[in-house]
Amino acid sequence: MKVYIIRHSWAVSAQNSAGVDRDRWLTLKGRRIAESVASTLAAKNLTPDLILVSPYARALQTAEIVAAGIGFNGMLSVTQSLIPSDDTTDIESILASIPDEHTVILFSHEPMVSSLTGMMTGTFTGFRPGQVRLVEHSEVQWSFDPNEASPGSL
Picture 1 (cartoon, rainbow, N blue to C red):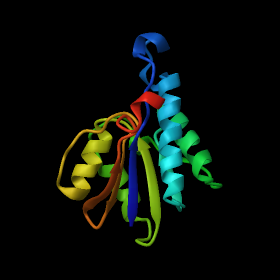
Picture 2 (cartoon, rainbow, N blue to C red):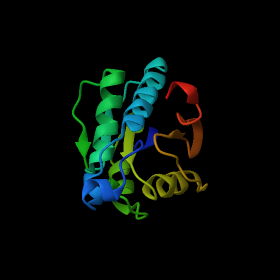
Picture 3 (cartoon, helix red, strand yellow):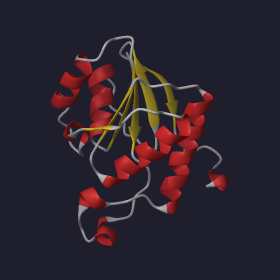
């Protein structure tokens, strides 16, 4: 199975969202970063079978921008298994039920994205907002950090 793990893009601070973490939305920079991710994945002709996303606003918004940018016509599957946590048990169970020939995109948060990548590969490294890693055969096969791509254009 190919699993693209994506951390949500840049979001407003908790103070700007009335202190409610789950309601934090993307900033303008965050939307531009998500669009950069979408165009990069579209150039790779990515056609996922499934997109799983955290129910938090910033992850949903990132997923919606990327899904539209790659021409995904399916529904986004929202799951509590991808909320900001380091407990990967539930998402591991979900992934175990998906056929090996499928391509899946996950949109989540720290520490979930680094914990999940670590569980799948044995290597734990952090993700920056909007960063993408493709995990296949227990290894990171490809990575894209839009924060380093053409910084002047953001």
